[in-house]
Amino acid sequence: AQSVTQLGSHVSVSEGALVLLRCNYSSSVPPYLFWYVQYPNQGLQLLLKYTTGATLVKGINGFEAEFKKSETSFHLTKPSAHMSDAAEYFCAVTRYNNNDMRFGAGTRLTVKP
Amino acid sequence: DGGITQSPKYLFRKEGQNVTLSCEQNLNHDAMYWYRQDPGQGLRLIYYSQIVNDFQKGDIAEGYSVSREKKESFPLTVTSAQKNPTAFYLCASTTPGVNTEAFFGQGTRLTVV
Image (cartoon, rainbow over all chains, first blue to last red; front, side, top):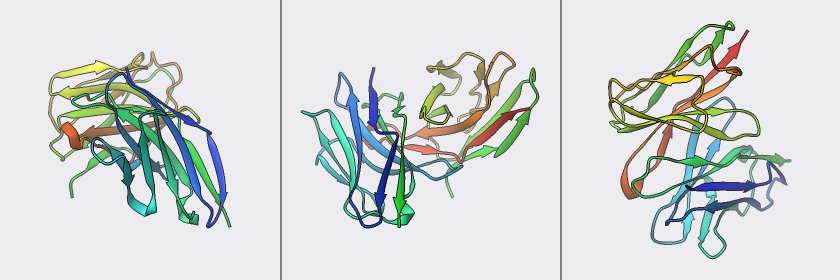
């Protein structure tokens, strides 16, 4: 079975600073990895995903993530935080032809002016 | 527009009552899911269905039931056996294969009064 661990339930950055949200996965087969964002009282929206191919994945709103097999990581980054980035972020894992997607506990990002 | 519709957005239930949460999708997806979200615990899988007339228990199925009589619909019943049902419930569906992605509804917030 696959799983993800998100390090840090809360991350606070200043506007304009680097955003780094950490995700490590566990999977016995090649994983498919995702980052989702959730705004209060709403569903989740896909930011980016890695399935196959290039390990550096670019998503919406200037976010990107790099799949590092040797480190079993898929950390989410953004060079310069914006106030509108304040939300909860979830890392998720599944695998090819498997409909069992598992989510991390989430990281709440706060952006200070 | 294609998407997933959950209703109602807010739901109040008296202790001892069963209540059904609706989830409808017009994305033509085979797989559908129900997740429960509690603060600091991420998304926990309740049930999922890979095809009509078939569904599997997730990690926290006790006190819940589902049906999948139509491809478009995957209702979740919270029974009186669920001891702590107050939570935010999210329905999702996924595309198959290498381009897999989860699409989410806007959620239903259930409160026991």
